[in-house]
Image (cartoon, rainbow, N blue to C red):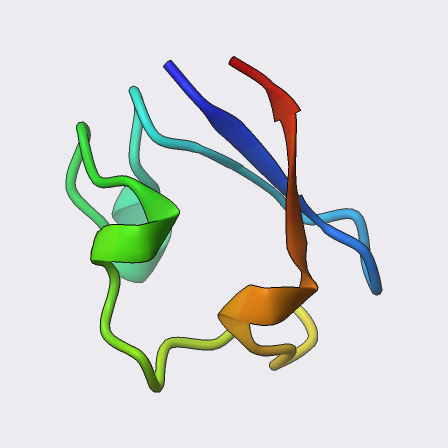
Length: 54
């Protein structure tokens, strides 16, 4: 399990759970998302995410 957090809006993405509201399946790591993926809350790019728990 890896939990990522957006540095701009604090949206948290848990790789173990995915995010069904945004069609991200469970088990998906941030680096596995498409390069053009953006935070569903504030539209920041993947580079704005940090790992907060592993």
